[in-house]
Length: 137
Image (cartoon, rainbow, N blue to C red; front, side):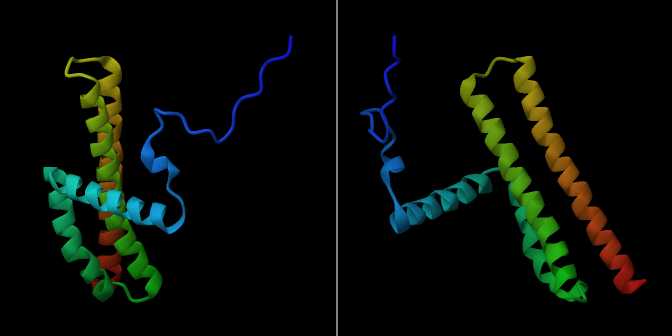
């Protein structure tokens, strides 16, 4: 018996309407969703605090860094913290969407997201301490 061939590129009635966008229209909508993600991130206390620090540290990177690579490393470390925090918040939101009951897998996912934020903060702090030491001491 021959298995039927899978149908290709046939949108189903349950397909998400945004998936059919292409080209610049898709890019424009994706940018809008990214901005909505930043707005949603702003509702998180930790992200707000880290974003406020970024507003100070990223311009400061241009003063502390003596070469473009140093500036990029200092600013990039700060941005990495923000990126990691947004991903952690996304993980937490997805877990909370599943349900409020305690579960070992939910705790594990949230703890691992939190650990990722911690590691990004440690990396950022180490880069900034090394750069400040080299620049001023």
